[in-house]
Structures are given as structure tokens and as C-alpha cells.
Amino acid sequence: MDAIHKLASMLRTTPDIIAQMDEKMSVISHKKNVLSDLVAMNDKFVDDAIWALELKHPPTAESVNEALIKKLKASDAVVFNLFKQPTGTSREGLNTVCNIAYELANPPEGWFLKRAKAVQILEAAQPPNIMKALGYTTVKEMLEKEDLFEIFAALRFVESNEWMHSIFDTIYRTITPIDFEQRKIELQVLNEKWLTIAEKFVKKKYHNISHLKELGVIFVIPLKIDTPGETMRLFSLILHYLHEVSFYSKLFEFYADRNDFSERLISLLRGDVLEAPMMGATKMHWLIIQRYLAKDNEKDHRLFVPHINPEAVHWRRAEEDINRLSKRFGSTELGFWASLDWVGDHFTSRQDGQALVSLDLVDNVMALIKEKEMIKYLYHQQEALWNKIFTSYFDEETLDKYLIQYFDRGYFTFEVARGSHLEQLTK
Image (cartoon, rainbow, N blue to C red; front, side):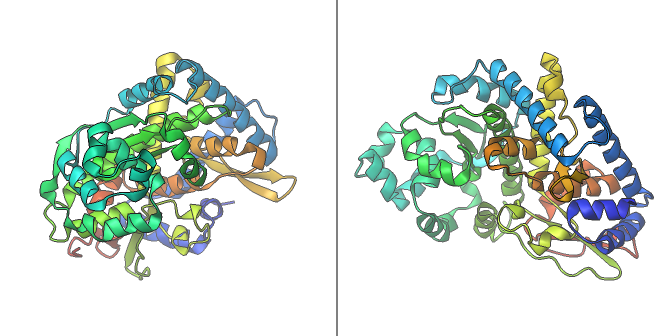
């Protein structure tokens, strides 16, 4: 199978789309054989992984998946012991996980809402479910006894979606750049009392970690660690959010001189994904997809055209952090996953004839958590592969630059005839 057909198969798109992209991007980047070199690299990583997993040739999709899950259980045991076997149900038990994650990610100071503005938002919003659950009649009384950021975190899982949307449509439209300040990202383990209150939220979201991009806060809801893979899932998600919150801080600051600042802010927090124009004969469009669309609809048409995804960037950096941890402690179990975020391949399957297997750490973490339900994940690897394709024509610095510069428009365009970016396309 040639490179174009192999990549098309891995990305669930058509060979024509990949071929047209390669033809134009080769002119734009002045690089040849990009896709064939990329597939050769992928195949080498796959062969090395098969050797490390001690599988007989030719392996089946089932044997590879089983070996990856076994390897991940070993990786999970490593971090579980490194973090002093946290129970997950108390702040003390989670502090080691959070402290090591913060040290590894080493996020810079960011541009976030001032605490005073957060207080004003709560006073204007009067969150009904939280105040009832905690037994307060006024926001002032509540904030005298409760942590401001904990209350804001609780909005995400105590108040209704309808209520949250109403806050965005009214109160958040009053936010201006002067309501922001430079400060460190906060990583908090919530008080144990939120465990019962958060039960519905955790079931819906499948994990007990989330974040408040505008406030620069990442929060962990105490939840018992009693399933293989839970420690790795917890640790990797914290790392991911540290990088994601830092990225959105750059976007907030980038929009500071915009007249429609509040609209841009709300759009970012909603996770809007826009449409891209159709590809023309002399133009090459790359879509920017803000979320993992495959989680909601794996057939979303935007997944099958050239695009880049910031989520995959955050995960790559989280996995690089984990690789640094492996080098620090000399763990081959953790080091196995280095640089595999975009790597995958088709193997013969007893059930499906041929099945795509992802070597991405996160896909396998999620598969391990869902092992009893026999759910396999692929979308983290596929989105990472689109990013890898783009950086193979350019580099990661260009990827980061274009994500910030064209994020609100949802795409950017190259003029193939001139081989240069269409800078005259204004926002």
C-alpha cells in the first residue's frame, strides 16, 4: 500500500483528498516525499513497538491491543507507586500527583480573569443550586466561608447547562480586557464534600478533572482510584489541562485589542468549530478544529479534510512530560509511549478482517478504563496524525503560530501559485 492510500485509510478519508493536499503542500513547503517519509517513520515506530511488546510476527489486531493494554497496566502501576499509591478520595492523597504534574509541565504565568471580576460574576449570577446545596442565602455570605475558585469550579457540575448558557449570554458579555491580569495557573483539589455533589458530573464527563480557562484554574474532584489505568488517566489529564489553559491564556491576550473581545472570549469557552471554504485549484485550506469532534459524531465531515487540532498539541506535550518523568526514574514502562501519539497501523483481525490499532497513550488509557465494555479509541491518534502531517511540511513552531493567529476564523489559506501564505485575508 502506498503512502497516500495508507494515510487515507488511517485517517478515514479518501486518497484523492490526501493526494491533492500533498500536491499543493509540496509546492508550498518546497519539500518532496513528505508523506512517504512519514509513513516509513510510522512503520518503523510500529515495528519497534511490536518488538518491545514481544509479539510474534505477524501479530493480529487482537494480540496488539491485548499487549498494549498489558503494557499500559504496567505503566499505570509505575505512576501509582511513584505517587505513593494515592486513594484519590482526599486532598492529601492527590497532592503528590498534582505537584509532580505542575513541576513537569512548568506552565508560565497566564492572562486570566481577576478575582474581583469573578466575585462580581457570582454576585450577578446568584447560582441557585450551589447556594441551596451549601445552605447560603447570599453570595457574600458564601464567599466569606467558601473558596472562590471552588465555587466557580462547582458551577460546571452543579448548575444546569441552560443556566450556564444564560450566564455566557448576559454576564460574560460585560467582560473586557481590563478585567484580566497576569498570574500563575492554579491547580486545586476540591474539598471532599464535593465528591457527593459531583457524582452526576463525573458520570457524564467520564472523568473527574476539568478546568476554567478564563480563570486559569484546573480542578480535581476527589474520586476513589480503584481501576487499572485511573492513575495514568488522572496524571495525563492534569498535564493536558496545564498545557491547554496556558494555550487559551495566549488566545485571550491575543484578542485583547479586539473590539469584539467578549464575543471572542465566549466563542472560545463554548468551543465553537467553524466551517472552512471549499478547496480551490490554487488554494490550500487548513481547518482549525478546536475540539475532538469524533466524540460527538465520528462522521463529522470536517474530520476528513486537512486540519490541525490544538487538543492534540496539548496531549503531545503532556506525553512529552511523561517521557521526561520516565527518564528521571529510568522507567522503560513509561518510556515505551514516547513519540507514539500519532502512530498506528492496520492489522489482521479475527472479527473485522482488518482493524486499525492506535499506539497513542491516551487512546489506550481510555480503552483500559473501558476494558470491560471492550471499547477501543482511535480519535486521539488520528488528530495527532493530522498535526504530524502539517508539521512534516513545516514545523511545530509554525503550527503553534497559525493556531493562535487564525484560531477565531477557524481556518487559514495558502496560495499555491505563489507558495506563500495569504496574509491579506483579514479577520
